[in-house]
Length: 351
Image 1 (cartoon, rainbow, N blue to C red):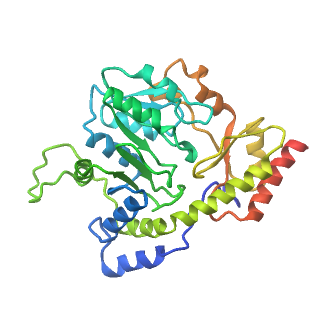
Image 2 (image 1 turned 135 degrees about the vertical axis):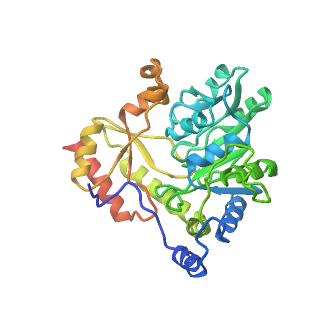
Image 3 (image 1 turned 30 degrees about the vertical axis):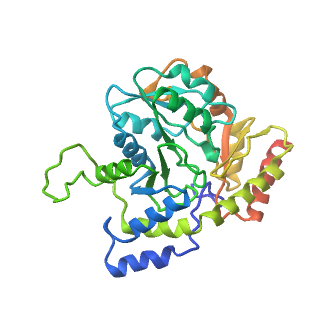
């Protein structure tokens, strides 16, 4: 179904076309092109971090981060219940076991429930900045120090939230705050971890390119074409974040006071504008008929077939999954677009 008001849309108003055209005319379209290191340096600098390692997706970024930390079979990684399944899958890809912790009322991991899930096998805590809300990182970092754990931030939905863990992994999928179509990047201050991630993303070739591969690695490389787009997007990141902040403000003002709608806590950066809605499925059908696309909240990890745990109906994450949705949220959304969307939500509840 085609929507007049899609949930997401990339904002490609900068140097994307210039940079990709140059990549094509220069013949540098593979992962060896110059835009890859330029993007890595620019994105790391934006985040006040020393090293960036670009890769093929946010999921592969998480996988590289865990592998670089030596995570594998027998290890456990603390993962939020309320997240996109890629967070858990990255752990499973390494052979380790995800251990799930319920969310708080802001949808982020409930930091008060992490310590009880730590065992001698726990190696990493993976906080996820859900929908752009920064997790309460200080107690997470304190727990990591106390138990000698590492912290991998899943920042797929939170470009602009400055990292504080050992590694932060960002997605550059087309619906994210900035994009390269497909792609991802890890940032870290640790030069050893950066070298390991770069080594693992490129088939673990030796320096002499002898075709002797001493460890299991991946083809998780980002192409120069993708990096050209990502660099142009990074140049506009402050502008895009500011535009999204205005979108959040207008939604807050327009939706406040509508019976049947519960607004969610503010976001540090706006990825998607999330809310809770009575008669959610009816509302979604009504909005779809008006050309407005909406999406459901994530389902708890313990409800997923691969991680099924009978505890899932009692989780806070499930309570939000039952009535949560998000509205169109992207930097190309105009004030008139938002007025129309808010008006249709209001009409649904006031009829």
